[in-house]
Amino acid sequence: VDTIHLKNTIVGDTNWVSFGIINYGGDTLKFSNITTSGANFWGATTSLTEIQPWSFTLEANGGVFKDSIYFSSQSSGTFEHSIVYSTNDPDFPSKTLLIIAKAQDPPEMTLSKSSYNITLDAGDNVEDQLGVDNSGEADLELSFSFEADTVAQQAKSKKVNQIGRAHA
Image (cartoon, rainbow, N blue to C red; front, side):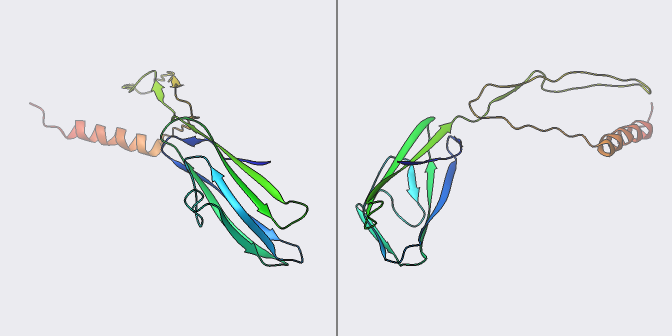
């Protein structure tokens, strides 16, 4: 049994793997009695579940079959899909391809603080920490960036607004 492991998939998203079969032999290669099992999987050029058993032929010396297998689930868990087939190749008269996919709940981020409101006088310095927790199943990818020019421009804008205010 050959096995393909798909990358972890977020519940509700779609993941796929593309594959190809090339006939390097000098005779026509026939695939027949192809059957599949397992929900949540489908093919790009083949039904995988609706037309069974199905078959195809690869011409000698470089005949190619290409397809992609897609996976999606609305619930978390590990899912398996098997493709079983027969061939006219005496070295591989039958074969099973097992596809394993894992659907997991998305990351769930919690911040220790939801906002910062800091006023600094000239020359002051403030350091603070931000705690980030991921209580979801999937990895959380997070990045922060602050552009000094944007922060400086906002500070200048605030100063201009304060100076331009009418005083009573």
